[in-house]
Length: 338
Image 1 (cartoon, rainbow, N blue to C red):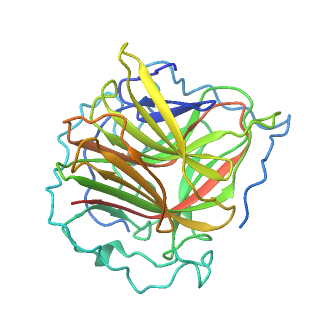
Image 2: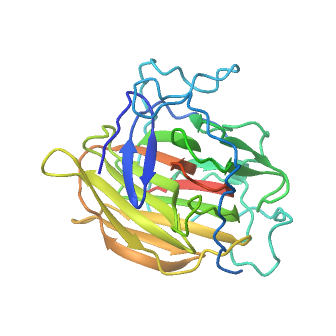
């Protein structure tokens, strides 16, 4: 395991099947946001080469701020994070009645549309349906984009119209790691943190020139503000399965990881609702992962800690060369604390 910790970058590096967390925090942006198993895709030998302009081992790895100021500068001191006070346990807010997008079958169990503007439950600390506007990062704190990766609105595949969130990485044979994800943070002492989103796999690419099944991390829940002491709960796609990868401090000062498969198939070009629930009401904490409402994994968290900082990430968190193309669309990201 090789920890790489730039000063202000948040990412998870996928090296084979090992994931290495990197961490930074900024303030939470407020307001509304408006089949079958995969075939492994191999990269062509003539695939475009990744730029080497975004090193991952140096302190300058954080992408430069966008011209519109949506991403914070790398050397900025993180402002205080929004506190999400725990709310009484209540039934989940109902979904809005607007119709799903053209990628959703009428009988799909995950097809219920979400309208963040209609949700008023106190336990909701973050919601993004990607429909209020079409410019990343929407109401997320910032986006992390490196190399030739792209983040964009998807107007073709979505659950709630008119947009989904598209993250894609082209095939690349050499260069540095690449990433394209959205990040937000908050602080909460609530005993339950429930993170859910809809996921649609357009292209799942294998290692270039090999039949190796790659690991592509797509979502992460981080507990704790400091990378060296935090608990990272990362959902990574491996073939047609999600794996829960727990990364946490090792006794020797390094990082230890544990990967556990989630029961259930992630199909290609099918919407699936993914939910990760962290229960901190008793010791040890427990982590449950559900696919379309069915539990596929329930196990103890690797560690417990008192730090109440929480970070949420969604997209292609980080992949390394050689890698074929990957493209995913996400919709209806929701975080509840209760």
